[in-house]
Image 1 (cartoon, rainbow, N blue to C red):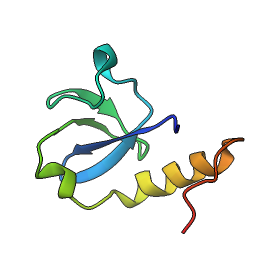
Image 2: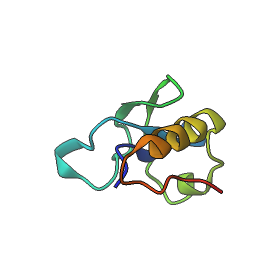
Image 3: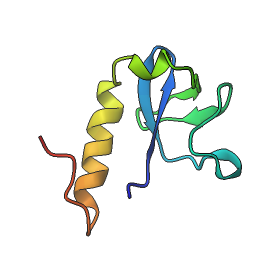
Image 4: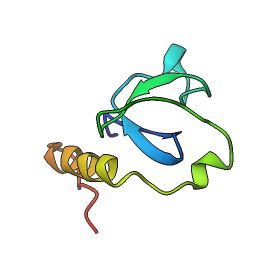
Length: 77
């Protein structure tokens, strides 16, 4: 399992190290999150939002983090 979670916000899919609120499986719409690209954004957990493009900065940082995990195979590809 990776320490980050994906979250649609501000027109892209971002990643965040913030914990999900109250043990939720996703960030509910309206939840403020700090993203791996360094932005403070508001989650949009709508069906359409999950189809948005991935933030390139969050994707690069998520790949870096996953490659450093000792039991991870990483996100290479």
